[in-house]
Image 1 (cartoon, rainbow, N blue to C red):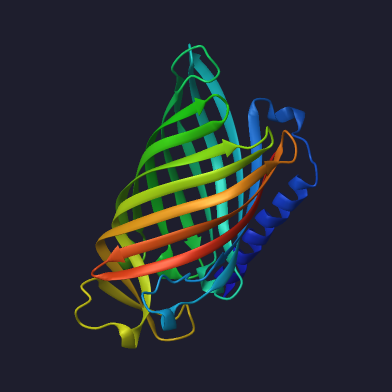
Image 2 (cartoon, rainbow, N blue to C red):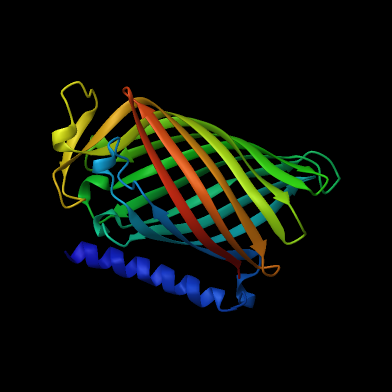
Length: 291
């Protein structure tokens, strides 16, 4: 109970700091070359537990606050190194046992291929964070190496092509271990200088974690199971290997100023594993602000 309170208090603090920053605060002079940014996203998810059965799906409203402070260091012609400290989390409206807070780091290199402002940029980096959950079995560290290239086509389309490997090490229960490989793209099609249509597609191959009512799990399910009380009923967490996840996103973002951006969007995700499909739909509303 005390751990639940501490995690919730930390998430509320992050959320409060984000709102305070968005009220118009400017970066203190002592930050120098360190640039802090904040982001708050609200997500309505119709299948937060990733169930293959409509009767087993649980919906929830999720607040996702995030803070980031980054420093970029020129290293050579067109080459920039970056290092950032991050903290993000989730606050769930119905299922607060899914709440977590995750401090981490993000570091890497960016190389611009040419002198033109629209020249492609190669990026190689690695992210690492540790998730402190309200439920012990969900605790764990995650590492994400990533390679990408950014392209700018006449200022009309700006996009990223990327490959990412993710590996999560659960500290309490191996059901929540997972690893996988993902490729995808994310892009902005500019309608005006301030407004863009955002689109993306990601394909991931690897371990997936789903949650299913225990009575719906036949013996033919090959994944490792673990009983949980997250959803106030008799559910099992199941780890399935060699799953295919397709994620499609579409939205609109608008720059309110040089420092503040708002976005709305829709995300469709479908997990296919062990002969079943686990679809989910998410509506998102977010605000980002560079202090």
